[in-house]
Length: 284
Picture 1: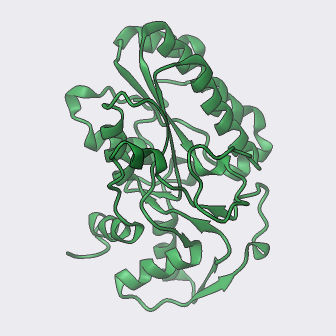
Picture 2: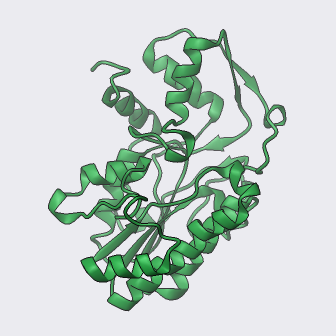
């Protein structure tokens, strides 16, 4: 597995049996090096490669375009090349950001992507590399990820940890209410990837916890579960201008999982509670 020390990678290392996984961090494999990728795949001859490596910092991608495409697209091409050469299945992790956010109902796998940022475009390019080079692949899109390890691209933080930390320092929080998301616990995502990749039902899948909410509603639920009184004020995206444009509606539906009888993902509220317990924020 590539990107073993990331937010999702860390949870994949927990759910996949130790004897079945070779965890590789960025120190052990730089996917922007074609030679390094081919050498590693040839050395280990895996049955499946899971690629969770990515340049995740959405706003930095706007300035660091070459880096974004080198990691999120060219690097995926190198991995797909090596997988094709050695007959290996690729699991490529993608994102809800490949969609423009103009839809008002949950995006399904057959909806046409329309990226609105460099990050989104680079991730979609990575998807296309996997698709045109391989017959046996899983492209997994998810949304609003948070997990025990935190996101490396965000200094090991995530939305939940950030809200809890900010509430200790600020008299009130201002959180956007006009951007919708499907919050997803990376442990749930990891468990479903582990199950899905053993099916040989190749293709593109959305994997999210059920339901949707605004970022404001998500923050409000965090503090409700913790039993804390925190002022969370509603603001719109117009109050927070960012270099990269983000989809205003980023909700995904697990349509393909449902078709193959594997959509038993729990609700985002249940998953959030499980995360808070796992992190020690909340007692059983």
